[in-house]
Length: 273
Figure (spheres, rainbow, N blue to C red):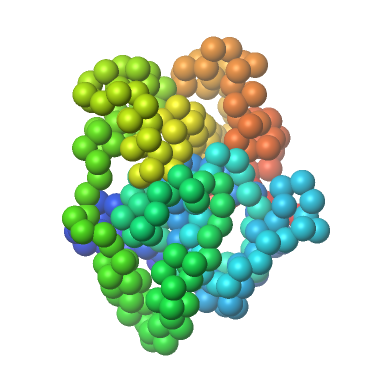
């Protein structure tokens, strides 16, 4: 029987990690999935096989391979994954702006990329998958993953104050506050704020807010049977319907009506035959 377990870690990890998860089950009825951008980073571990595959958006014959543990940088475009990897896998969903303390480099350098963990953690990255496979029960696996994150975390485990404030403002209602309004309350020059935000979040403030607005739209319409796209566009602050469709296609690769027809069971996952 398929299982999907989630765990919210204890502080201080809970300030940076949204959840840990473990999924086990049979093969999906579709071979690939389109993953939509959401403004945060993820660590993914394939426990079924020591391989991660990401497909070219335009040519499914082109496949990027990595060993079975990768860090998925914050994306501003969709990417395509192999569902065979979901037979047994684990992961870490970082909060927006939550991954940077664990990887010792500006996360902006990993934007729109998948990075093998051993390139970031060395032998500890290679050993993590082995340790998870040896852990006998789900709770043991979660403890191994939490311990690995705590061991890698920079000290002190905290965000830049300006980034912390900006994330709170942007995540509340991503289209309600302008970048200038938030920057004006920070005491930093716009250039310094953009640099600090990008280094800890992975995207510039403007692009991050666009991605989060798109994500909020997807979350709202994910299970709606009848969608009034004009009302959705207005509710989320788009100039007009053309602006909304242009943004939606930029982030998802398809238009809103195609999304409604193709959407799957899970948020941000669109089945591909």
